[in-house]
Length: 413
Ligand SMILES: NC(=O)c1ccc[n+]([C@@H]2O[C@H](COP(=O)([O-])OP(=O)(O)OC[C@H]3O[C@@H](n4cnc5c(N)ncnc54)[C@H](O)[C@@H]3O)[C@@H](O)[C@H]2O)c1
Image (cartoon, rainbow, N blue to C red; front, side):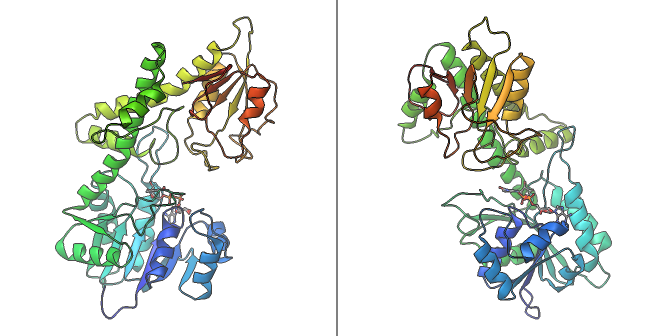
């Protein structure tokens, strides 16, 4: 960092990525300004309440009371920073294509205040070329005339919320810049915060690597979902097959089947890749096929569950157990259970749901676990969910989580 400047970092976006980064930088001796355009979130954070599970209120309050962290909606404060990291969402639009509106807004909002010699980093997940083709032109066209040198780096975040082992500090960080001096600035910045930093030759390599990492998960989950359907049709227990294959000490990594993929990363990021492929005149057929297979799972699960019900029942009552996209969280973003519910309804079922961590979901409320049903689908095994109570009552259950032992009335995927 510039010798004349205090170590002030501005983090744009105070969510799952931005707030943990702010706290890790505080731990590393930085003074941090957390900028977010949502006033209510800024007020919550400045009041000492953390909006993300990975940061405790105690940690946040300590940083605020030491005067080394504050949240703000005022973008002009980035003028004090020698480094600015952009950590805003990169969702899909209604056509399920990349929506970089928030990223553009963030670049536009910081640009007029950027001081000379500032490092600007994009941590948001996006397709290759986002830093060079979107962020840099915006910043360069709007920056103050006297900010002669601005250094640009892509360093995609790899955080896995709720992971007890891997965090921002001990997960190696990719750094790719547009030129040598930006690379040196970027490496020095992340070396001050992370245990290991991996230097790559361009921002596009870092951006592409992030898409590869998440697409790797998507296609492997699709493979096992497809494989599950094949095994099930032949009466083979897929979980036993996966365990058997896992005994190979090299070249195999186990993935488990389920209702589909959820959360805001695995279902979303590969669509950045397929869009980028089309834009470049190519086609990511393998990835598109994986996405289609995963999106076929909710229908497959719905049909499997209804097959378990007596055919004379016209409108079977189906109870979905667990609607969050993974166990232990209340997060329902992109949950495949939405598609499962819709397929069940299309097939004539009367559907209700139960999830001890989710108080409301898509305009509906949960029912009690003892809701009278013809079949239950265990979609996500939440802690504290007493499925044994249903088994004891003789309720038919389709287990999509492999968490119930084989017994009468219980089928697995
Ligand atoms: N959450 C994860 O597990 C994870 C992991 C790796 C990468 N990522 C990527 O990191 C990025 C951020 O994701 P997240 O999960 O932290 O999102 P988030 O929704 O938790 O938080 C983003 C924050 O940015 C704020 N914001 C939106 N637009 C803004 C703007 N123009 N200026 C200032 N603040 C703005 C929002 O109010 C919100 O508080 C995305 O690109 C995501 O794909 C997320």
